[in-house]
Amino acid sequence: MPDSISRTLARWAVNLNAADLTPAVVDKMQTSLLHSVVVAIIGADTHHGKAAVGLALAEESSAHGASILAHSGRATRCGAAFANSKLMHATNQADSYRMLTHPGPCIIPAALATAELGGASGMDLLTAMAAGYEVESRIAGDFIASTQARGFRSSPIYGTLGAAVATGKLLGLTEDQMVTAIALACTFTAGTNEGPRSGGREMMFHEPQSTRSGIMAALLAREDVRGSEEALEGPAGFYNAFTGNNRGELSYVFTGPQQVDFGPVTAGLGQRWELLHTVLKMYPTAGYNCPIIDLMTDIRRAHQLPIDDIESITIDMNWLETLYPSPAFPNPSRGQAVVGSTHYFAAYVAVNGSYPPLRTRIDPGDDADAANAENHAAVLQLMHKVHTVGHKDRPAFSPRITIATAGDNVYQGEYQGNELEWGLDTEVQRLRPLFADINWPDDRLEAVAAATRAIPDAGSIAELLQAATP
Image 1 (tube, helix red, strand yellow):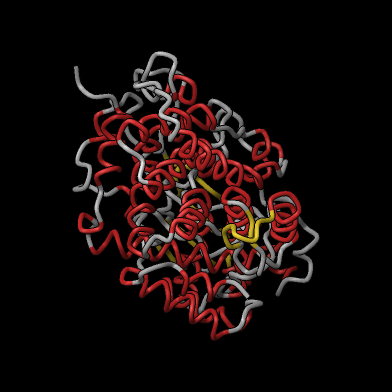
Image 2: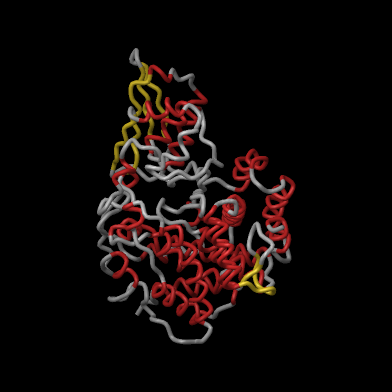
């Protein structure tokens, strides 16, 4: 009988060594690490970020605990990780895998706290992150859209597993213990889509709580309690609960067939790296809006658009991106021309030439903070000329924008879907212009970037934490 999915993934994760990571994998983990730490520093200035830090210090303060980013306080492993996850998630600028999962705010806070408390090296941290990212991405894969259709929000559902594996790797779990950690994570995970569907904000707490649950799954696995061998694919296991069956029958997919097998979840471990498809969100909005903002910026840079002469803007995109959080129960406001919608962001960039990455987060229908925006009236007028068209054969994050103007002039641009899968050099290039406007000293932000670049050779993560805390 072949090994279970959990057993195969656990064996690979436990035996993963730094030497097994390709240069591209190391670079990708450094990129997500830098992005997450800088976003956490930005998030520390938000109401949600301050509330998370206050809660962690009030309930779980520990002089010998783990560091809370952008703060001088320390808390228990779970308390610090919860706060740091909230900081990384507060502005909606976390990294993303296949649009609907955000591994960074779950995996990185868990790994940072555990690496700090365990005195791990920089390469130990990156290796654990790679294990967590790869396992989470592979388990999620084609199943994400079906999880959304079940009423669950994919990011915390799969993020709990990623956090458990990364933590377990740093704790030095055995293969059997890692199998148990995965089984416990399957049991502990949670998060529903009613908030994204109706505008509720409980999703602000999804990733932080999943981080805590993933850590606990790894810690409890050290008790050597036997976890379910087929916790993922068993008749009453994870896939049955969160996708509707354990036969690979999918209710929705981004593209491709609705019948898949579980083979690709474990095939080619260490040769095919799914984590390389993680994208970075520079803007405080839903992930699918980020490539539209960048593409429209490219079009504006290449052409002098006559804004007053624009008759229509058509955005062709993946069909699930137009029906967030799921075709089973879409949020109507996200498909309409309202402030904070795809229509709004496309119009904003068409009018102004770019979108400010440090702008206050605006969700669909949030008009209050938008009224003072640059050329607001012109943006509102133009967004009603924007039309989104969903396609089942178009990959996620691969928009095509067509701008028609008076006189039958047409301007067009198109992405292939991998444009946001950049590495460390591009991340630094895109972050550095923002440093002057982030509430953190420029030299300390430069130190964060330098420490992240140097972390593969660092004996500990102390230099990174020093730059990211007062």
